[in-house]
Length: 194
Image 1 (cartoon, helix red, strand yellow):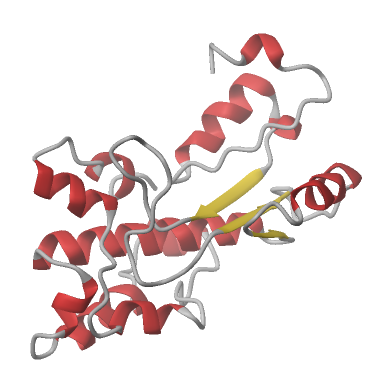
Image 2 (cartoon, helix red, strand yellow; image 1 turned 90 degrees about the vertical axis):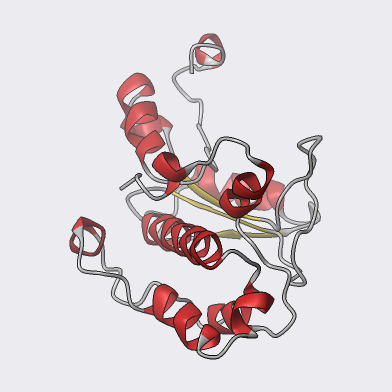
């Protein structure tokens, strides 16, 4: 924030696409509630050179954005027009906070299941009961402040179950890949961020 603060003016729109939720509070406190919009970025992963690379058989590149209060404002309509045709699925949301909570939950769930079971989704579903366990983790969140704070009754979107039960899928979490490499793991940032 210190690095980009000099570039922030009264009409600047800050569009973070970080994992988790806590960053929104820090940005809004520093730059004001109106400056910060919500965003979700869904990509398959990144390689060692920090370039986007696919780590799964699923082909998804999505960018979702919106005003945190759900309004469709002229600045968001301009952003939406600008991002169309940029090589990924870009869409304006009127419920971006829910989308951010859903992504956080699914990311945390994927990290938990792949780290706990020590493998990719395809390896997990290949063992007896693996597919059921995988679905249980993503479709039945525990009672927690997360569910109390949002409308997150079923955090699993209609297209999620196939991703979580696909035979042979190489889908893993970055947390699992970091664990396998012996690198620092984002457990506090992902599983501990609420």
